[in-house]
Length: 316
Image (cartoon, rainbow, N blue to C red; front, side, top):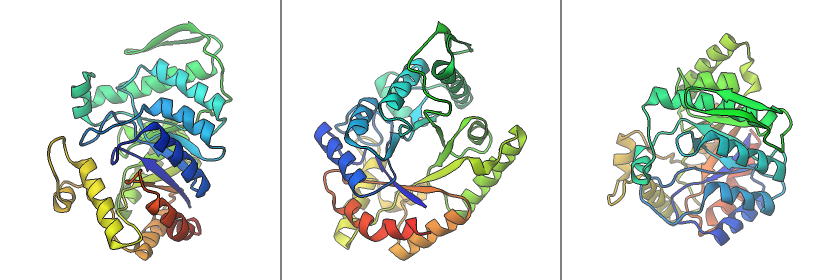
């Protein structure tokens, strides 16, 4: 099983620290480095633009996969996202992952003045955005006419090879999200699910794949895990507080009990329990676990994970 890292909004992030993180995650042998594409989540902090940061990731690394986990269709016009994606694929061939989703966090939309449609419209827009991007990427004279988006006779180069950039769809909604995964995705990523939740989502995905004539085994499967773990109690306390700060709305606090009651509790336990949990997910078809790096300013946890945790999960 592969092990990846995601950088979210738990810690303020600047350019030189991002450069360091890119080099660190590559040096430590992780499979991927993702960023959550939020303008903020919980409390607002210093941040750097996601797509600009991927140019640096392409330049500072040679091996790892990287991309957004995931870009909401609401933030940017899909023609702009598609053009950036094909340029990033040209810069780092086959390593940029085009992670897409319907969007879910209304607060950042309200604060930044971005329209946040109702759920059905967001999923309709997501399907249109994927179709438009494929026209941009592969057609010599791309044309697309949808309800929300259109292009007319564009020849947007450089055209990537078929299947690139790989499309990742984030989410686990059994009706719309997993249908879009079955129809369009190279990879499916889900936010944390327990064993039974992942089993049920897998079964729903298999039904959609059967409907569209696709083998679900052809779809790579990954899961984000908010594991508040570290080499000692002190480090775990810091990581847990960073997780809670990320989950708390602006100007408020939240306890671990509050997070658990809201269904947003982190994964907590021993290394042995974590490896067993990942093993059960692997038996159900999971290919990669992606852990949040909550303390970007400190290398302690990723270095410890690379030495003590990652080899055990990779051996599953």
